[in-house]
Image (cartoon, rainbow, N blue to C red; front, top):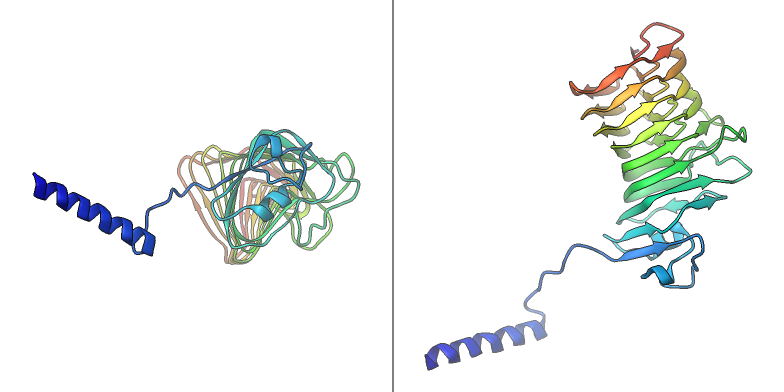
Length: 287
């Protein structure tokens, strides 16, 4: 018994020495910190408690490290674009089932911008309603611009009242740039419009879109692809029981417009129906 006790003490002493010397790594939980944001917050604080909440989402993002979560504590009136997300890190923005409403008096540049502009890194936005409120003010602006190195996931997000007017491409709610990957899960895109293509979503050449879960894309309008427009060499996956219905195109593809050279997969339970277009192929147009 004494030998066994001495052995245990020896092992304990050896591990202690190794820890001090940095020879043994102790696993640390993957979960990061939580940063809080409030419309009554203060950007000079640290954001680590509700009482010390920050004022701006972009400030919280700049403070966040890989794996951190930003939590919105209330509804937000947003008078300007939130800003650019450029870092190679993974951050979650949890809306807390609140609403961000764009209240600005001028358009957001829709050529290469959005209320959220994610240029790189991985961003998950969840439990949030984004009301762009563009139609009432005859303005132009979308909710999300996903840039070339962006990986964006929307989970339980509603985007409504986006409007693409100025520019040469489209995407009333979401623009997926070349090289970007966007996943839309259990979300709703409604009452968004584009003067050109992609009333709700525009997938550029080389962009990739996945729509899954119980996502609903409805009551959007555009010249082509009122629900979704996938450009040449763009890729789209429609999975789960997604429902793309009651969208209206002035030209072709009331539900989905697939340009020549694009790639598309559709699961059996996906619904694409009840869409209208001036030309044939109301629901899905294959160029």
